[in-house]
Length: 419
Image 1 (cartoon, rainbow, N blue to C red):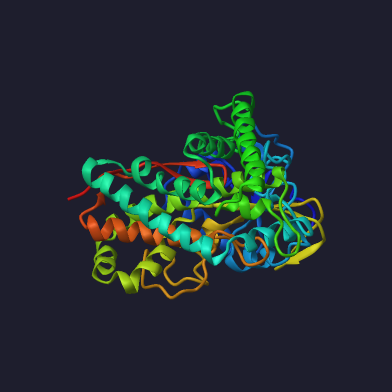
Image 2: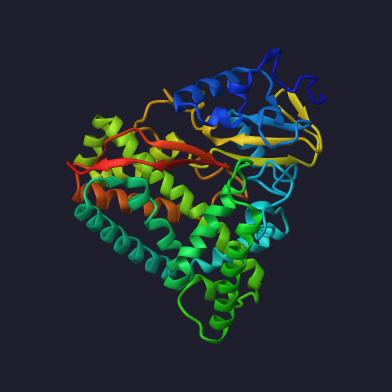
């Protein structure tokens, strides 16, 4: 099947710009409105093709196929030879952002397998125990600060606080370099937005400074090992494998970007959902042991912090009734797959008692499933337990302010109170 003759279509139905899932206007709509559009796309016999025509700043001559059904997303994720991650998985244009060309997210085998194997071996039981202690300590401190502060912006003062501290502590980044590292990660993600107000000239000096810090730490750790990830990644393991300075820098930027954003948005959305659904909140408060872990999973499924991911067709492949050809580009809409009515009963309902069918909040199955999923789960459950066991009256006092930053569905502001 060739590319469609119309710039935007699904089957024979024309899709207006307000429903173009590449358009900034689409992501400014209310979540229920977006879910309506995704439900219509899932019901079509063929995937929809969306052009760049309604996206300011993008060329109009090409676009992407939208993969919106849960089963189709799973199938694409399980077939990396046909559906490549190179050159990039989270940008619409072809080039990976500066400093991220070697990210595991943007690589196929054999390079991806090598990097993932080294990183996975670095997460030793001893290191994970240390990380868990750090997570608990940070959660207690953040909760105590919230109790003293009272009403505030939850997104800024709570949700955004824990994730970067955990990641930087785990890597061994000194306190003096953490603020810049987090800023670089956030700016790098913002650059995926064609309307980003930050220029590449503003971003590059901060990126260089951050990567130089990581490189200096790698050199120091090779002479003076410590119990952190930079040491574990930069020194040869039992098979003689290790990451180069550049690979460690790229991995750190990926870890900060992906790890911080997913946990931050999940925590903010948890407060929104538990405020909007007091019955679910009371259920959680009544039995943390039973409902805390399921609640964290349901938050991630319901809000899909990573809204979409890109794949690039390398081999002819028939998915359902449609045949993709080399050069085609796909966007896998996790935000749609996680609301697929053929997989989840009453998918728009927030229900922490939902059976544990695997959602797509940490990616689909296959070699690119999120390596930090367990870490993210630990952060979310620990923070929610600390918050609601000590401050059971915590609630949102206004609707969240939302924005889409590249692949991330972001809560930029969320007012809260404690009583």
